[in-house]
Each structure stands twice: as C-alpha cells, then as structure tokens.
Length: 124
Image (cartoon, rainbow, N blue to C red; front, side, top):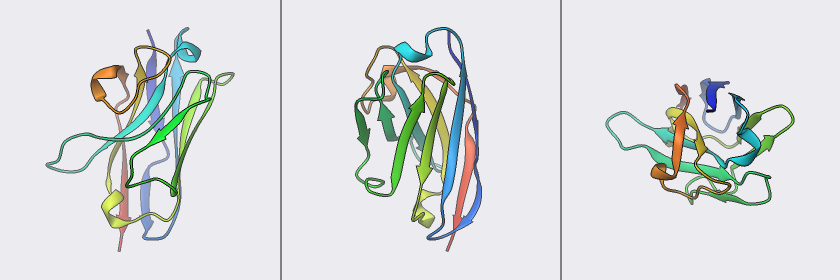
C-alpha cells in the first residue's frame, strides 16, 4: 500500500512558477503509474498529468501541455510537477495519485491512492 504526501503549493502571481512534490511511502512505488489531478471550487477533479511506472511515458491535459512537466525519481519515491507560466485558471487543490498498474491514463478511476492535496493559488 502506497501513502502519498504533497508539498510545494502556495500563492504565486500569474506568469510565475511553482514546483509540487509528492513523497510516497510503501514498497510498490516503482511499479505504479503516478499522476496529478486538480480540483477547483465547485468543480470536478480534473486530470493534469501522468507518468508511467518507469517514467518512460507521460501524458498531459491540453490545458497544461507545454507549461507543466511531470517527473519521478523511483530511487527517492517522489513525483514532481513543475508548473511554469501559471494562469489564474490553474488555481485549485492539486492531488497526487498512485495508479493501480504501471500506466494510469486520464481517468481518476485508474488510481487507487490519493494524497491530501495542496493548494495552488495564482493571482492575476
């Protein structure tokens, strides 16, 4: 069983950058896809990015493609989300998630372990 703890959220001006980190505990981290999702107030949880178990495959939501980069370090059991050129519409609680298998895709249903979330606020 994997347990996840996110960090790195905060308040930033539009055009700025933040780096989110997710630390995982448990013995299966390197066997699982990892992903970031986000949820704005009164909206559904949306897919942001995912990375396969060995880090060979990544997938991004169209809204963040070219601005966000997901990466993982299986030796350290961490997955990061580098967010550049932030926009006010990126404001949300960001969640780290561990997949059921080596690749998870966009669907939240493919992920069975979630962190507590970290708030990202982008001011205009």
